[in-house]
Amino acid sequence: MKNRIIILLFLIISGMTAKAQNLLTPELLWKLGRVSGKGISKDDKYVIYTVGVPDVAGNKIVTKTYSLPIEGGTPLLVTDLNDWMVDDKVSPDGKYKISSQDIKVEKVSGTDYYPELKKSNVLIYDSLNYRHWDTWEDGKFGHVMLAPMVNGKPGKAKDLMPNEPYDCPLKPDGGDEDFVWSPDSKRVVYACKKKFGTAYAISTNTDIYSYDIATGITTNLTADNPGYDLQPTFNKKGQMAWLEMKRDGYESDKQDLVVTNGTVKLNLTAQRDDIHVEGYKWAEDGKSIFFTAPINGTSQLFNVTFAISSKMKPVITQVTAGDFDVNDIVGQKGHTLIVTRGDFNHANELYTVDVTNGFMKQLSHVNDDIYGGLAMCKTERRSVKTVDGKDMLVWVIYPPNFDKTKKYPALLYCEGGPQSPLTQFYSFRWNLQLMASNGYIIVAPNRRGMPGHGTEWNEEISKDHGGLAIKDYLSAIDNVSSEPFVDKARLGCVGASYGGYSVYMLAGVHKKRFKTFIAHDGIFDFRSMYGTTEEMWFPNWDYGGPYWDKNNAAAQKSYKEFSPSNFVVNWDTPILIFHGEKDFRVPLEQGLQAFQAAQLQGIKSRLIVMQDENHWVLHPQNALIWQHEFYKWLRETL
Image 1 (tube, rainbow, N blue to C red):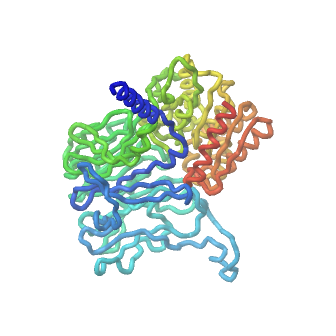
Image 2: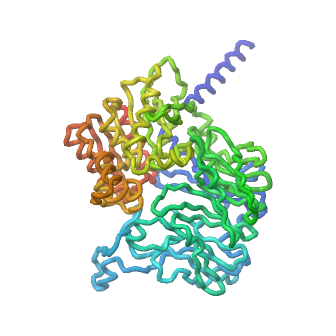
Image 3: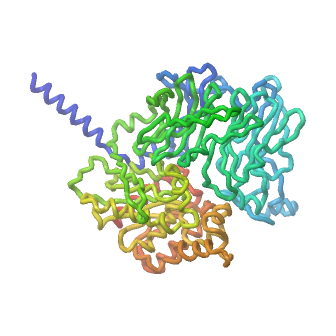
């Protein structure tokens, strides 16, 4: 009997071990729920959140809303959000509701000018910004609308931006957070870039506007700031906070958190050179603000206390710490804050944070069943010296069950941006856990141009795209590949956006280091990029200006030294190229040129055009093809 028990225990333990050794696959990745917080319930007892679950057969994401007790428990399906949450688009006094609606303002189509030619398919433009992100300009603009509440429902709406060719929410990433109520219900406050055409395409100057309900007068509240002003919110005392960048045309300027009482303006984060605020929420008492920011390769939660009317310096405290990312701040109840948190091995889940000591506890468990059966990947911080003697953080992600006595192929992961942080992110495309689970060591450098390491480090990439940042990549892969467990004959390089550019650039200067390359939506040729992209402020700032300005030394250097097309003669390595046909940010022609150059030089290459995708891959079936082609290529070439 005793022996039978021992055998049974052995089988149970063996089964548990086998279960824990399952590896992440593209199919499992696209079964994971995507958790996003919405807020706290009316009675302060529940956190409201959504879960988006991929429907591969239907080629869509199905999103449902749930409520979960803040103390933990069983989630409940929410069928009517109004039963659970206050509608913050209804004025605090209940008299009005605000919304956004597309309004036709400009003539663009052939039928606008020639209504009798109803079957024409023509677009007519007199200025830039004729297309943006993934959409051709059609003359319609999102406007803030104000409607009186009648018997609990909104009545006829009034346009607060009549005849204005401007958008609120801001495109392409804005949402309902771009227009809010003042706590006294007297004003609608909204963020907008009130520039049109070519002026819009070369400027990042958004402002925050206040519409007075009684007088109908609109006032620019941030006219003194030439850069970005975004995400206005109020505390109960009527003090307003927002996010601010100082310089016009620089989309990756240091983003600070500022507040005003209507008379005095106070920058809360200017004192910290290493802080670039990504999101924020007022504390319940209105005396401090919680915010998230990248710091040393992670995204963490901070709190800043202040007194606008005094000369006291704002006090910034880091609330959380660890090798994970705190992403969205959902809400607060007393000393408990609700956030979303993820890491290289886990997609976002809801967590509680004790704001007195930073202690975190997982609240939602949407993906526990899948993760419970997966082998996790070890992640490691590594400090690498750059060519100019600086210390660079490099994340190294190891395959499950890593054995240092064996040799593994390695992939250099090149982050996009170019000024995006490389933290403990969890992507449903560039998933480092999935890459490592396929048997590769992943090398992910926090190269020049990434927030969280000081403003100087972040800004060194501007007008130097192919300079120190590319050398940082080589320093990272050379350092890690010197380890005995790395097979130096099997190194690959992968990336998207600026990461795709990096792949193209490295393909011309890597000197036989890499055996294969994969680029997605990368910039191949600076001249044609300048001639076809839509947000002109980006190449104007990052390249230094147009290619035809012969008197601009910075621009001429960029087009000569940093355009990958100038080094394509050195290409000698297999390359896989993905590109979205609806990507107007980095137009399709960039990928086509790269593929054509590889093919005509007899280099093994493959082009995959995602015909209904923009700069991302958003459709489940396309995403699965992307993943399978990605690993198929690596098997063929590495």
